[in-house]
Image (cartoon, rainbow, N blue to C red; front, side, top):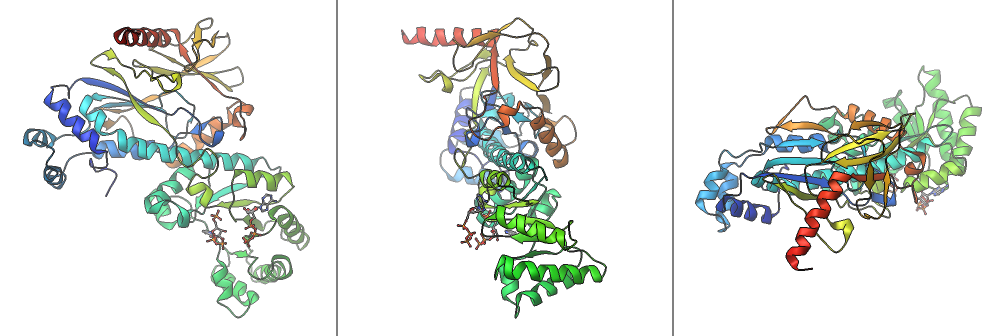
Length: 480
Ligand SMILES: Nc1ncnc2c1ncn2[C@@H]1O[C@H](COP(=O)(O)OP(=O)(O)OP(=O)(O)O)[C@@H](O)[C@H]1O
Ligand SMILES: O=P(O)(O)OC[C@H]1O[C@H](OP(=O)(O)OP(=O)(O)O)[C@H](O)[C@@H]1O
Ligand SMILES: O=C(O)c1cccnc1
C-alpha cells in the first residue's frame, strides 16, 4: 500500500464517483473545505502539518491497470466508469495554509476546488495525512513550549518509533514532530526519508552486555569519542552511573575529546537532573548535556521545570508519536462540500458547531500593532474592515465590530493549480521555522496548555448572511 494509491480511500468515495459519472455530475465544479472543530489536547491551537506529503499525493494520483482490475473484481463498477478512470488524474486547485502555520477551529485549512468526482475521491487520504500530522505537530509544539519555559532552555527529540501506530505512523510522526519543533528523531528511516537530524544514546542492554558499567561506558566512548551520551540508571544513577560517567568524561578529555551527554531514564527527573548538573559543573563539565526520557509529556516536562529541573534535552516517545494524553489520540478534521456548480452548499444539523459553512471562503488573519495575532475572519473574498460586524461561527448571537489598528493578511495560498504545485515544495526546515514564528505571535493565553484563551475565528457578514439564507431555505423546504 502506498498512500498515493487512489485505492487509499473509502469505498463510498468510489461508489459515489461512479454515481456522479452516471448522472453527469462528475465534472461539476466542487469546493470542499477541510477543517477541524476542536483543538486537540484541550489546547488553544493546532500546528498545521502534512501539507507537502498531501500535495505529493494529489500530484501522483492515477489509476494503474492493477488498480482497475481490482476494482473490476469487486463486481460493483461498470466498464464505462472503469474506462473513464484510465488517464484520470487530479486536476483541481488547492488553497491552503502553508505547513507549520498555527491554525484554529472552524477555519478552512485547505480548500479543494475541482471536478466533483476528483474532490470526492481525495477526502479520505487528505484527512488521513493532515489529521495525523497536524495532531503530532501540535503535540510536539506543546512539548517544545513546555521545555522552552525553562530559564535554561530545553529541546525535544522524538523517540517514539517503538510505540507508534505501525511503521507508517512512526515515520510520519517523526516528520510532523520536526514541523512542531522537535530537533531530531531516533528513527533512522525517518532521517533518511526526510533529511531529519538523527539523535541517540544507548540502551540498558549495552551496559548489561559488559562485565560492569564502567567497562561499558568506556567501550562506547572509545567507539564514539565525540558523540557519546551515557545512560546513567542501569545500576544506580547517583551512586554508580554518575561517578562512572565522570571518570569517562575525564578520560575523554585527556584524549582530546568531550563527553557529549548523560541520560536519565527513571526516578525524579527534577531532583536527579539538579544533582547531576551540580556534579558535572563542579567537575568542570558544564557543557555536558543532560538528556531525560521515561514516559515524558508536556505536563511532565512542565513539572520537571517547575521544580527547578536542569534537563537540556527531553526524549519524548510514546506520548509524542501516538499523540497521547487527554484530548489527543485523533484530530477530528473533516472535509465538507461548500459549493457545487457555483451554488453554495451546507450541511445543516441540530448542533450549530457541526453545521458546515457554505461558499468559497477566504481566511484573513489580523495582527495587532506588535504583530501578535488578534483574530481570523472568514469572508467570501473581501478583506475585513474596521467597524464591520463579525460573528462567532457556532453562536450567531455572539457578534462584535472589528476594531481599528489591525493589519490583515490573506492567510492561505494557492498551492496547487490544475493538480500541479504552483511552486517548489517547501523544506521541513521552512515549515519548522514558520511554526516557531507563528507560535511566538500567539497571544500568551492561547499558548497556555490548559484552559487556554480561545482564539477568535469569526465570520464576516457575507458568510454569516449566506449561511443564514441557505439554512432558512433548507428549513423552509422541511416545512420547519
Ligand atoms: N519531577 C517530576 N515531575 C513530574 N513527573 C516526573 C518527575 N520525574 C519523573 N516524572 C515522571 O513520573 C513518571 C514516573 O514513572 P515511573 O513510576 O515509571 O518511575 P521510574 O522511577 O521511572 O520507575 P521505572 O524504573 O519503573 O521506570 C514518569 O512518567 C516520569 O517521566
Ligand atoms: O517516552 P517513552 O515512551 O518512554 O519513550 C522513550 C523510552 O523508550 C526507551 O525505553 P523503553 O520504554 O523501551 O523501556 P523502559 O520503559 O524499560 O525504559 C527509553 O529508555 C525511554 O524510556
Ligand atoms: O537513543 C535513545 O536514547 C533512545 C531511542 C529510542 C527510545 N529511547 C531512547
